[in-house]
Image (cartoon, rainbow, N blue to C red):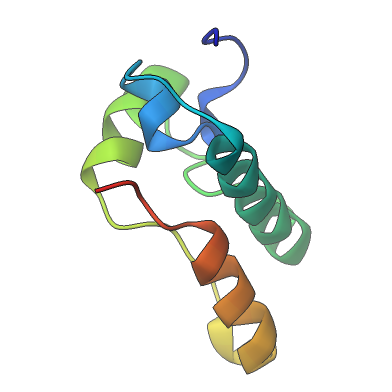
Length: 85
């Protein structure tokens, strides 16, 4: 239950330090899938300190060109990137 590592893959609850569980790893899986599809994680052009504010406050990211991937892949990524309410 620590906050270590690159914020690009961190789940919103990890960044907010409100406690987290296995769902944070599922979030990281979704981000990794986006990275594999786009060859970079979401917000890569943004400074890491700014990303800490973006991830909790904006809707979950998607691949840059969703039409280039199957509906099943896009749906799987969306299921991985569900924010805790």
